[in-house]
Length: 177
Length: 197
Image 1: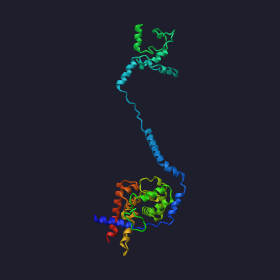
Image 2: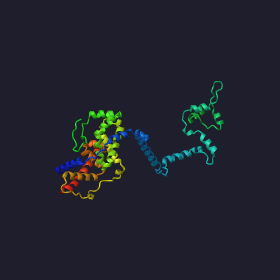
Image 3: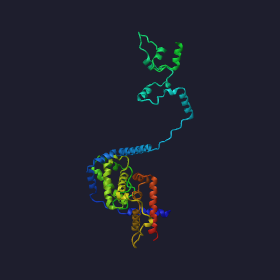
Image 4: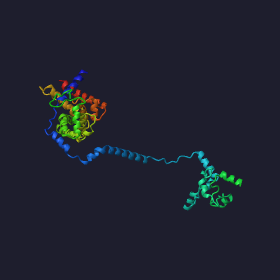
């Protein structure tokens, strides 16, 4: 241990004995002249914006790599199997006439557009749709609003039955009539 | 300014000054305003140390002065950014960075294996201090520049581990391991060449 200590001391002594190279007489003058020399513009820019540019470049590279990795990820070819319960439910809907709402197989574009514009009553609320009711209500005659009768509804072939009124309410209206 | 420890060699300024040197602080404040007198004061104080550090890290005396000059120019240009830090470690950091940036040094891969070292022939009658110096120079030639920098900053410039870590931008643990490695290599070299006499 003491040997190591002595060797370390020898190292220190020897390091200090190594002569320092002589400095030229015009060292200071050259440094001052270098200071007076105008700096290139890009050095000013780099000094102020360098960290920002570096950070932005790193972030951009990371985002590009991430995007490449995501786009090259393999996509699963198989469709997830439909649970049996859902499949059964769909079959029952079809058997109850739900299939009538599907467009015909040989429909052209105009038919498809028409079909798509039809209202989907499956999602209808049990409450009256005020907007629809207003749109479908007949014009007021002498300040009174005449309610459409069931006959009116039946006579309008374009109008789907029960539109604007929940099915329960429509049947109640028939009963009361 | 009270020198704590002075160098043995020539006109090199004392190694350590008091950490809070009011005189230096005044000159640095003047240098921040672009005062040439302040630049000259700092140059006269730290010029030799910068050249010596560059010479030891580069192991090329011819380039040491150029590197020291460049370091001073950069330090004076950026001196407004110097806040609570002392000037000397900051200057050392610039010197070491410039040394390591030199293209030829970047090609350095690692220190040579000890077995590849040529046999040191000590001439009869040569003083022990000269022999020691030759051994140390051999050791420095074998070390990689970052290891040289650690060794010189610790043993010659007497910086503490924390300051060395700050100058080199490495963890303190790395400073310790590099220093241990350099010392152990020196011991092996010493025993091989001088210890057997």
